[in-house]
Amino acid sequence: MTCHTGPVRIDLHTHSTASDGTDSPTELVQAAVRADVDVLAITDHDTTAGWAEAAAALPSGLRLVRGMEMSCEGRDEDGRPVAVHLLAYLFDPTAREFANERERLRGERVARLRAMATKMAADGLPIDFDAVMADAGQVVGRPHLARALVEAGVVSSVDEAFAGPLSVRSPYYVEKEDTPLERAVEMVNAAGGVSVIAHARARSRGRLVALDSIRELADRGLAGLEVDHPDHGGSDVDLLRSLATELDLIVTGSSDYHGTNKTIELGQYTTAPESFDAIVARASGVPVLSAPPGDAMTVEDGTAVEDGTTQEATGDLRRIR
Image 1: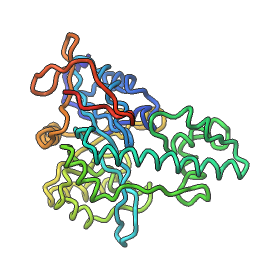
Image 2: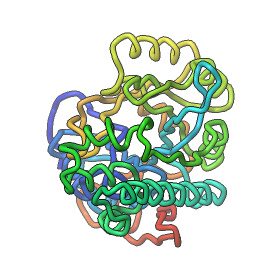
Image 3: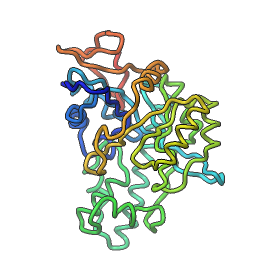
C-alpha cells in the first residue's frame, strides 16, 4: 500500500504490455506503489485491455483512473495532416461507436506493422512479422519492431531504432489511418469521458498540432492539455500553460511511462490535485477505482464494486458497475 506523507502524486499517462510498455498492468500498479504515486492512470494505446488486470492488482491507498491514449490526426500550422495523441479518461468502454473505432485503430496498427516488417524482411533485415506479433501485447506498434531490431542486433537501442529504420523519413515507414481529432473528442465526450491532448509540443516527434486547432477543439468539448511532459521544453510548457488559461482548459502533467522502453521514471511529472478533481467532476463514464482493505474495490462515492468483470470480443473491458 502507499504510505508516504508528502504531497499527493498523480500520474495520468502510463503504458503497460497491453500496448507498448514493458510492465504488465500488475507490474505497472506495483511500480506506482514503489514510486509513491497516489493516483495512477493506465492509458494504453487504442485499447482498454489492461484495465481489468490493473484493477485486480490495485492495493489499498492507490486510486486507478482507467483511460486510453488514442491515435488521432490533426492539422499543423500549415494545414497539413499531423499525428496527435488524445488522452481519454473515465469513458464508458461499451459506448458502441467509440468501441468500434478502437477496434478499427487496432486493425490499422496490425496492418501497418505487417507492411513495415515485410519491407524490412525484403531488404534483408532479420525481422519476422509473426514473431513480432507473438511477443506483442494487445496492441502492436513501432516499439515492438524497435525491440525486435535491438534483439536482432540491427540497432543498439530503441531510441536508435526510432531515429533510423522506424523514423517517418525511413523507407520502411508506413502511414496508418488515424481518427480525425475533432471526431475523437466528440466520441470521448459521448462516452462520458474526458479528453486531454497529449504532449502537444513534443518537437522531437516531428511537426506539431496547430495552436488554432486546439482553440477550435476547446469550443467542441476538449477538456485539457498535457502541459508538463518529458518531451516539452521550458518555453513550450509556458506556452501551453498560457493557452490552457486562455481557453479555460484543465492542465495536466504526466510521465508517459513505458517501463524500460523509455528512460523516464513513473511519477517524474505529475498533475495537480485540483486538475485531477476537475477531470473526475466532468466524467460520467466509469468511476475512479480504489481498493480499501478487504475483497471489494470501491469507487469514489464509496459504492462497492465486485471482482467479477466481463470482456468484449475485442478484449475491451465492459464497464464495472
